[in-house]
Image (cartoon, rainbow, N blue to C red; front, side):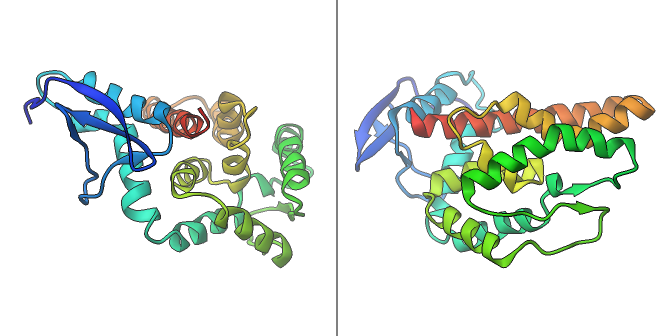
Length: 231
């Protein structure tokens, strides 16, 4: 599609902020007003439109697609997203460790355990650590508290949280990324610990490295998107 607009602006609209192309407010893919909670987020969306060339590249609308998902999907029914996020809490990668006599276990304990302990203290929960891959349910009380925590989040926060949590396969990492002092590079390093361990043992594969780089970029973009909600 050829570029069809000349001017990109941001203006207050319906209690939030909206991008306008040649004076016309943008709508979501489902036709709803694309109004964001903060000006910073709207300005990030505007930058995606302003940075397009003569031919519009849909792949460069990362922030726009995330915003549309929050408005068109999650704002109408957040229950499904919350259930999916809780499933990552029940099978959280950071809670499934190697057996204590394996070298990987020591690395998991050193790098994962501090984050899990901080998560438990912050959220007021207790999570089971499991050696091996056999599923073991998490405490019902903990899952109930996490459900309440997720229910309190708005659609935009849930949209970003879903990306972070699914890429990390860890609700611990997803919710930790919501903290203002969350280090996105360190969180991604923890999410990628087992893949890095395998690469160190058996060598690196070019295709696997490329896939990991794309996932990392998506993780960082989602973290930035959540940061725009606090701006």
